[in-house]
Amino acid sequence: MKPPRPRGHRENLWLALEIGNSRLHWALFIGQTLNQTWDTDHFSESSTQKLAQCQTLADLPPEIFPPSQKFRQIDGKNVPHPPIFLASVVPQQTALWQTHPHVRVITLEQIPLLKMYPTLGIDRALALWGAGKTWGFPILVIDAGTALTFTSGDANESFGGGAILPGLGLQFTTLGQNTGQLPQLETEIISLPPRFAMNTAEAIQSGIIYTLLAGIKDFITDWSQLFPEGKIVIKGGDRNLLVNYLKFQFPEIAARLIVEPNLIFWGMREILNSL
Image 1 (cartoon, one colour):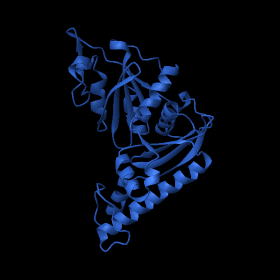
Image 2 (spheres, one colour; image 1 turned 135 degrees about the horizontal axis):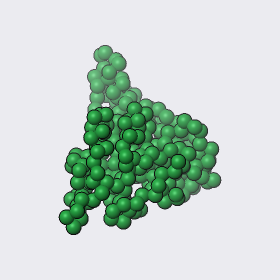
Image 3 (tube, one colour; image 1 turned 90 degrees about the horizontal axis):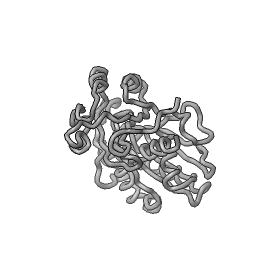
Image 4 (cartoon, helix red, strand yellow; image 1 turned 180 degrees about the vertical axis):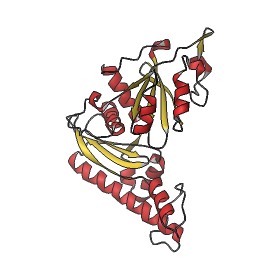
């Protein structure tokens, strides 16, 4: 069943919610205009049930709904709870939110991309659709999140395939947790480490960072041979870190990247506008 078009107070105010592997990503829209974004932790079942009982935006605690007071009350009256349009890659969290009376789940079938496979992540599909509708097809989307993904679309607005591998932070964490003698490192490194390191910490940095950057360059180079005029957009929590690394190592690649964290929200907006 198609979700209804967002109708509500203040020129069709609506919320977008992306449930990611690590965090909940929120956006407040007024019609087609993105007003504000913020992140929260995943909610427990009891917390989600309490939120489901909220009838107005004034009922939502500020840590869940941080936008200014003008969205909570107008002329002394509480603003009714707007619809929440949800896209999720975490089944357990999806199950919790599906019972929320204001939630409308966006599904893969509602995205007009051609040639999608049934298990394609809704986050990848929405980001690709949002990027393509913003900058035009063909387009390549790189998501530098918990997983590092490459998702491509061709000039016919068809899904063109992609790849998935552990993201930068996950690689550091996994190596630190599963190798007894190796320290767990932070990913906020200002400059590139020496390639042939003389201590364990820098050896971990070198192995992960240089291999990851070489992989990104290889994927972009290969895709660019197919679509020389295509655009490349990067999103995700590690986007700025990876772009900075690429500026050191492959500046010509970094110069091609469009940095845009809100691609999934652009995709959700495009889907709702088409209904």
